Length: 122
Image 1 (cartoon, rainbow, N blue to C red):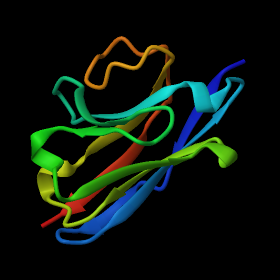
Image 2 (cartoon, rainbow, N blue to C red):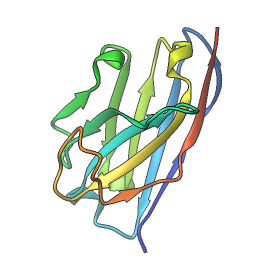
Image 3 (spheres, helix red, strand yellow):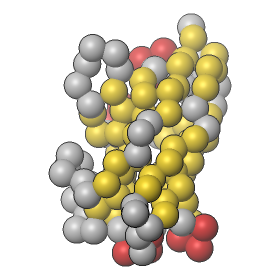
Image 4 (tube, rainbow, N blue to C red):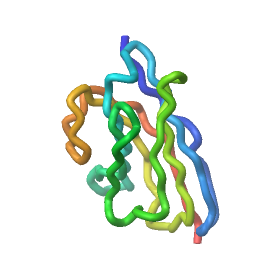
C-alpha cells in the first residue's frame, strides 16, 4: 500500500527556516517525480515545487523562487523542502505528492500525503 507521510512542519517567525520531509513507502520511489503543494484556510491548493525522479530537474512557483529548495534522497525514499526566509503568506498545510509520469505543476499526481501544518508569524 502506497503511503506518503509529511513531517517537519511547525510554528516559525518570519525570516526563519523549516525543512519539511516526505517519506514514501509501497512504491519504487526512484521512479516517481515528486511535488510539494500547499493550501491555506479557505483557499485553493496551489503548486509549490517539483523534482524529477533523478533529482536533476526542479521547478518552483514564482513566489518561492530563491527561498525554497526541493531535494530528494532516493536511497532513503525521502523528499525534502528546505524553506528559508519564510513569510506569513507561506502559512498553509503543505502536501507532498508522487507522480510516475512527471508533470511539474500538474495537480493530477498519483499519490498524496495528508499534509503538515506550517505557520509563519510576523
